[in-house]
Amino acid sequence: MITENNKTCAVIGAGVSGLGAAIRMRNKGYKVTVFEANSFPGGKCSSESKDGYRFDMGPSVFTMPQYVDELFILSGKNPRDHFNYIPLDPVYKYFFEDGTCLDAYHGKEKFAEQLAAKTNDKKEDIIKYLNKTETIYNLTEEVFLKNSLHRLKNFFTWPVLKGILNFGKIGAFDTMNGANQKAFKDTRLVKVFNRYATYNGSSPYLSPATLNVIAHVEIVKGAFYPVGGMYSITSSLAQLAKDIGVEFKYSTPVKEIIIENKKATSIKTNDGIQDFDIIISNMDVYNSYKKLMPTAKRPAKTLDQPKSSSGIIFYWGIKKEFTQLGLHNIFFADDYEAEFNCIFAKKSIYHDPTIYVNITSKHTPGDAPPGCENWFSFINVPNNQGQNWDAFIAEARENMIKKINRILKTDIRPLIESEMVFDPRVIESRTSSAFGAIYGNSSNNKFAAFLRHANFSKDIKNLYFCGGSVHPGPSIPLCLLSAKIITGLIK
Ligand SMILES: Cc1cc2nc3c(=O)[nH]c(=O)nc-3n(C[C@H](O)[C@H](O)[C@H](O)COP(=O)(O)OP(=O)(O)OC[C@H]3O[C@@H](n4cnc5c(N)ncnc54)[C@H](O)[C@@H]3O)c2cc1C
Image 1 (cartoon, rainbow, N blue to C red):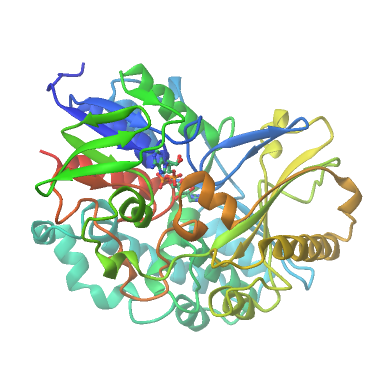
Image 2: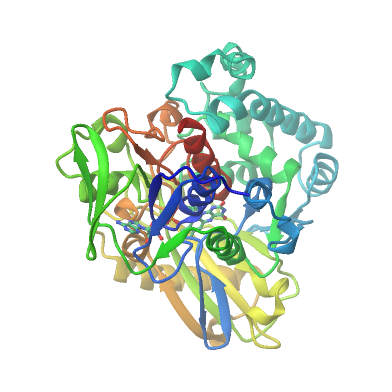
């Protein structure tokens, strides 16, 4: 039962964290209105259908489902009546040019056993490595994920102090690749663990070894498949928000956040100006300042950090079933370092890219016609700096098809009967992400976690920020945590 407090809250954007923030603020008693530029909720986590195929357009790997469940429980509902997911095992299939195929299972023991059997590293060494990533997780969860890094008082709790006192153990002074090369002899295993840098659009050759913690989250805590696909996360949260009384205004882009005497007071849309007690922006923070508050003092140090990578995605309807593939499949580049160098230093695309193919019809047969599969085929690319994307798309398509054909010993070209393409320009225009970067600032330096914008404004009262471009960072669970941190800050 919600106790009304007669105060109002505007949420700008119905991305996953905007939805999380709206649900949490409504539960605090606020009258909440969500303004969304698109005609649908979800932001990056949306869904489209074409020629009998359905695709999740953005995220595909689901971890830490408890942060979705929490929102239903908070609203007095049983999550299982509204949103369901199944654990994945195996989680990934990794393919290499030398013909190796590795199945990545859930849990330390099984994962290590399977990988040791097919590589030159020992099971004990893989387990030792996973134990180390678990230690990093335990030391960093409270400091970097669950609390605002920008409130001094948060540093005086025991779990946070423990994290700070053990800073030397979290790998902040090595790179992911540096730590992974020390841990493993087999270059295929180094690639498997280096790849987790891409989960926040960074390079394993530049980002701190602290990010090896992502391996722990996926391998040990587990990855899940939401029944009905990833879009069921945002569609069920949008429904929950509506059910508890949140008002949605779709196709209503916010044009301005009005600030008076250092206080955010109202927002402006094509429908006019509306006053609110609290304003939460789920719009990318760089563009929140640039487009909604162009005259406000901008925190240049955080906003102008180098941005993450982006992606070229082909949504292919494939008129055949491939039994050797699973839900999550990776086809690795031969020279991984050259690929990241191309993306981050040359701002270009690599001729032999690592390809991720996600096939939800493996779990939801209705996502493709009988005997067919829906391939979300993704490569990492630089963010949008005005490159010739049409030329890159044509080049990437050829390189991806050739690589998949080579590794699977097949010819997928005649099997592609339906196609849609996303590139950084589309991601930018569809979600207002600065430069089409998928994950906000990159984590390509050891201070990156401290250089993300806070969940509140230091200069403007009543103004808060959630989503992948602010603390604690991108991905569905972290975006939901940003919403949780905000509502903890609002008394
Ligand atoms: C291709 C791809 C793959 C990914 N893979 C994964 C994955 O496997 N696992 C994972 O956990 N995460 C993944 N991510 C990242 C994850 O999707 C994002 O971190 C997360 O969805 C971002 O949510 P958000 O709350 O920041 O909002 P966004 O999704 O960025 O949405 C912001 C919303 O705000 C709206 N908006 C912006 N400006 C305005 C305005 N002025 N007025 C009104 N509305 C506005 C936009 O229209 C949009 O709907 C992936 C993302 C992409 C694109």
